[in-house]
Image (tube, rainbow, N blue to C red; front, side, top):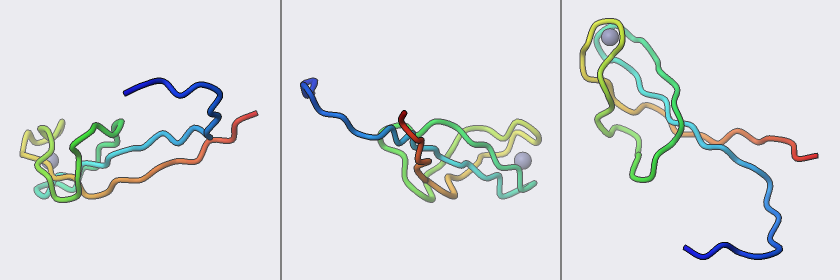
Length: 64
Ligand SMILES: [Zn+2]
């Protein structure tokens, strides 16, 4: 990856939501390369079941 000089892109932080199929807890975290919907997620903080990635989305941030 090279840094592109002079390129100004709006900041679009991407988030991954992991959902626990057991208790329904949703955990939002920063997107990591390789994430995709229905991928196995981390451990549920409440019931320690395996979570599944349920949503990936970008949040538009206004750059001033
Ligand atoms: Zn759970």
